[in-house]
Length: 215
Image 1 (cartoon, helix red, strand yellow):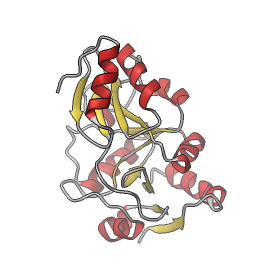
Image 2 (cartoon, one colour):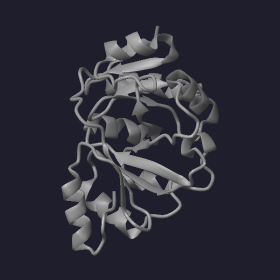
Image 3 (cartoon, helix red, strand yellow):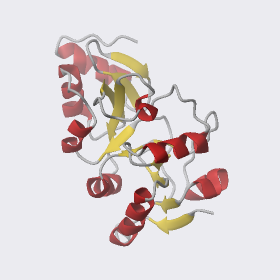
């Protein structure tokens, strides 16, 4: 079974070394996000990404989104920041909005699924931001097997994935609800998934700057 550690302000420094050790050995960490628990590996670690895909039973043609702890981590993941993406970042990050960018050319194909794009989110969960600022960007795909429901407690992750996860950070129940809204913000902004951030807010913000959000 996976090691489960409490993830609170008082335990942050204690668990950080365990997180780094798991990541350094190509392992998988389950952690709370602003919606559900997610599965975190280093986005440049091909061996860890392969393990993650097998654990979830995830098709190889589905890209894996990445979580960052601050905007200054973005350049290592993206080839460019299109104007519409910059606008959405300014208005809605940190927040439950995954923005799709042109991917940096050296990212693993397992991460991008050969699309040439990368979905990135700056979570509003402060504890997660602080962790990512210390570890660097990590994947944020949901902590469940593909086609099964998302999970909102550490115990549920333990029960569903068991020894497939090396470490579970128990931050208590997550809010659940809708997943992050996802927008492809390259040449012509396109709604890929409706979610926790209302689409009308995004559409109105883009329209004020002359962009039309298609769906």
